[in-house]
Length: 77
Image (cartoon, rainbow, N blue to C red; front, top):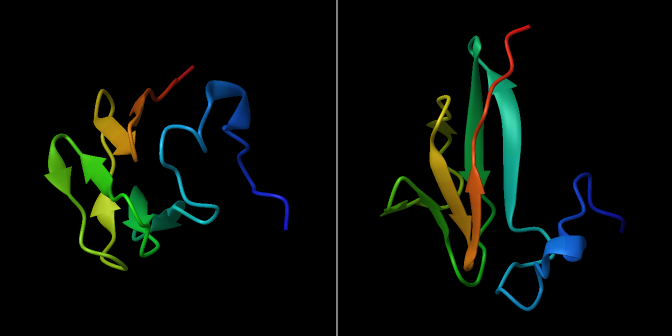
C-alpha cells in the first residue's frame, strides 16, 4: 500500500517511522493528528500521543514521528 504522504525522501524508515504511523484528519472544524499504534510513538510538542486519540494541530506545533521532526505550518493565503 502506498502512503498518502511519502516521507521516505526524508529517511523516514531509518528514523523509526512505521508504515502506517499517524493520520491527519479534519474533524469538528479543526485539523487533528492521530497516532495509529506506531512502534516508536508520535509526539506533539513533546507529549507522546495515546493511540487513536485525536489531538488538535495548531500553526507552529512540533510533531515527531519516531525521530523525524516536522513543524506544522498553516498557509492562510
